[in-house]
Length: 528
Image (cartoon, rainbow, N blue to C red):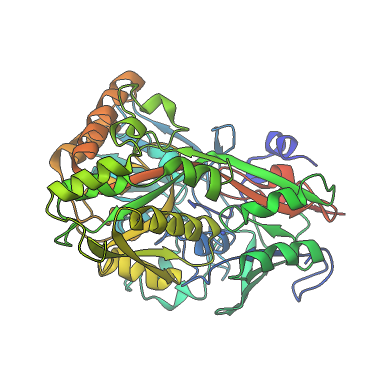
């Protein structure tokens, strides 16, 4: 049965969710959870399984098979009921009412109620990298009954419902009164979703089984296995051998696309509706990188067309602005970083000379570290190309390849990096995805602004853009923010990408409908 038909039949058809990013298969028969096992290859080891406190790919891909948000967003950018069956807002977007599905239980048998949502809004949302904009205007949360939640805002915030697609709801009876970041349930999650955790073999795999008491509609997957495979080529070989059924976007090695295309055994998909942007953070507390002209020079020295064509193999384009190229309506024609900071190594060298960093006798100006996450093909490729570009102008670069957990600490928590590359999802609206890269991040939330720049003009512009639904007015505020970002340059936009993934079409029907905006429609999968 096709997803479109299922959605027409019942809202539950579209609520089995997993994925981001951001946002990270063996076929039928096998596994302890049932007859049909679906094995997903991920490139990094999840630090934990709570997607409500991170946008890490592996954690998201696994955790959101267990947890669910209030609302989902389809690939056609349509809002789809999930834990909330319906919703409405007042005229000025300061009050949003969510009517919850009834009869939903957590995996431990406890009922899901409005108190869980209230707890998430009041105590957990601030820990999510995308929670800041809503927390800033949230005034109160009311629960008139067990199936109704009313979110009251001090100021209008138009994309509230869109934001809900990114927040997996946590059980209050497990997390309330605890330190959410260290709660043991992060390693042994209890959700409402279509799969229940069986084993978390750190560094090796995560095994889940079908939730027999799931409130929504399910597909043919009885056991779900996420296999940690850091080696890029090994993931493709496992797909070809049949040991893996699915390689999600982010973890698919683009060079292997030509190997699989044209073979009916494989399904290649583009997750183009989820705008991704590869960018490079500067640590502005580094005395050298504190100089704006140095930051500008380094950006001018990077061949962003080369990143798009050589690293992304044409599935990306050089970033025009701090907002991904795909979100064209929010980018004023006057903004074009490919022209404002055009690739020009001679000009980059002049800027560094003028800034007081001439080449020494050994041809070197200074040395920086460049951090990136291992197991992600485009991250490594981008870092290597940037290293080559910068060393051509006399800047020595030490590449630092890190497991995602170490990367989060060095780039976001401890700020021990110099330069750091990462690909971040734009999500459904610039106020949800792009803004987090540039607004003040004094609390050092992961997968948000790592530059340590706090600028009132940028912050205010993004806030004002969130307070109106008029697209032209919003674009004016986004233009103001992006022009100021060009004047501060805490992060350098490198490339806007379309994510590519692959699956075994000879083993599973429904792969074309399985991949959603930032989740998976598990109910679409039918074993052959």
